[in-house]
Amino acid sequence: MSMTDTHLEFPCTFPIKAMGLSDTGFDLLVVEIVTRHTGPLSEGAVTLRPSSNGKYVSVTVTIRAESKQQLDAIYTELTAHERVLMAL
Image (cartoon, rainbow, N blue to C red):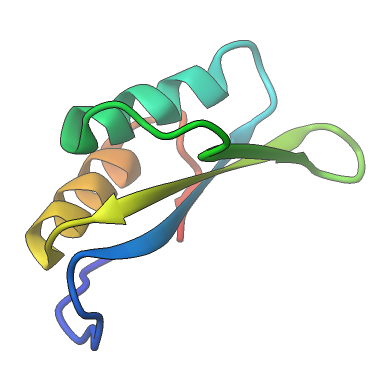
C-alpha cells in the first residue's frame, strides 16, 4: 500500500492494522515491525480483535506518524512478511 495520495498533515495519529492467522506471537511480530520504524509505542497503542471463529486476528497499532515515507516503510515491511495476510 502506498500513501502517495494521502492528504494527511504530519505528524498525526495513525492506526495501522495487520491481519493474520491467530497463532502464537502474531501480535508481537506486528509490534516488532512497526516499532522498527517508530520507536517505543505509547501505552494502549495496540489492540487485538479475533475473527468470529478465532482462526484470524487483526492487530491495530496506533502510532504518531511523522511522514509519508515512514508509513510507506511500515506498510512495505508488513506486507512483505509471510505471516501478514493483509495490512490496512
